[in-house]
Length: 419
Image (cartoon, rainbow, N blue to C red; front, side):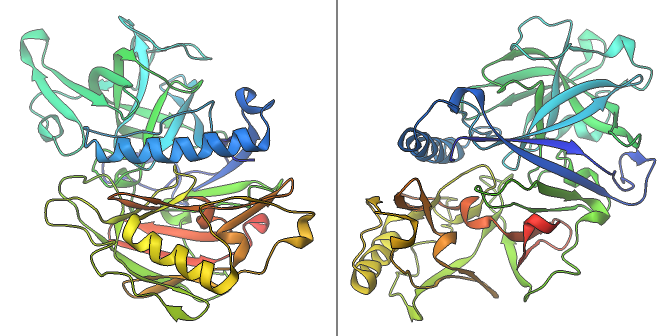
């Protein structure tokens, strides 16, 4: 259950780009197909849960390491998102990890001086008529917010980059622009990307990474409007999930009340989506959690982010302990421990859980913060030190919109099976 790989196949296409140009003005709709990774198919539920927990904490450590960019730490392909598209003219099919915690789009290229094994041919810029190098004089070559870039004028006026990730994956190469194309025949020209000649680490059977973070090199930042949304189905559902980009990213037409909360800027970790979590309620009782528990400190530590690549919700220990003790008081259940059920129907009732954000409340019934499978009843929330993370388990069956221009996260309950 927990060790799952999401594959994206693109259905429609994207909008005009202030940097790039598109053959469609209607936005992207991407289909997410969830399949068990081959590495996890033979694992027991307990083993898959252990891997999901380990991966959540590993990703958190990577985020707090404050490397240039941070990507998912992979355990057998668990909870990673892969997007399939074409690059170049003619288009070469590639499949890349979709990462909300980094900003650069890059793929492995030839000549390859150091490479990571991948399932498809390596991109060769000499075979593409739409490839164009970014010269040193381009302002993007001095961009140092989310990647390290430098000018190599002595080597032919090349704009070079170095991207480092939390699992020690690295890519070095040159910045360029290229045409991306999709399954319906649509395309975007002039997309800034990295052509990696020196690559090492882990790519989970893909060819590179598509950054979805807040920096100006990310895919959503190169769109007009710069926004995206997704609706993740339950991990027990056979229905596809969906990702929307550009003008397709909208919460209109859904049921329920839309909540909106502003993003918070953290100059020390500019790629991540920080939110202001100001409190938690359980069963209608506002918990006496210290105001500092989830706040972003002046030095960039602590705070709360929303992350589609982390399975568990991780709460800073002082706040988590108050929540844990209140649940013991209300239902007699210690969420630090999983319990064995006689059957599915014997799971105890749980009170409504509410996360109070600045300007909006996010509400969770039992199945959105506890999971039941094969007779095991476990919490999808755990304690940690420092940074708190709203994980993807609690984002299921919720349509979530990231608006980079308005600097706001909006969300609404949704039946994602019907998208």
